[in-house]
Image (cartoon, rainbow, N blue to C red; front, top):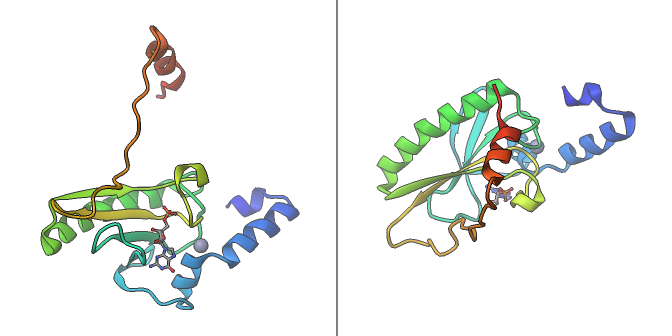
Length: 154
Ligand code: 5GP
Ligand code: ZN
């Protein structure tokens, strides 16, 4: 879809990215992976560098770089699948909590530029020191009203 709108030069860059994409290579079977689920749209594999044992990632079979490129229909299906897997993995792993994490862009922590949704089981006495955290900011008076106005959507 994106490709139809791209210039020749952009198309080249996109093809290069896709060509060198680790997750596309996993999809093609060029790189091995431990697969826990597969259907026509997705493959779900164990992350090679897990935040916790059982950390998995949902990958669309087609290459979409991020949430902006991902078609709405697949975004919906990915969330339905995440819900199903969260329940299934929690039962099997007997974990105490569960994170869904999805990074877009380098600044947001994305390192592989093929959309993926992290499924991370959390354990009470587990590897929890690097949980996603942030220092909270403070709004100026009236700032939340302005922002809410800016962000309002039908
Ligand atoms: P991101 O940082 O882009 O949100 O997440 C990329 C994830 O892909 C990382 O957690 C990383 O460990 C995982 N990853 C990178 N290369 C491979 C690989 O070759 N195989 C698997 N199974 N996971 C990978
Ligand atoms: Zn890819």
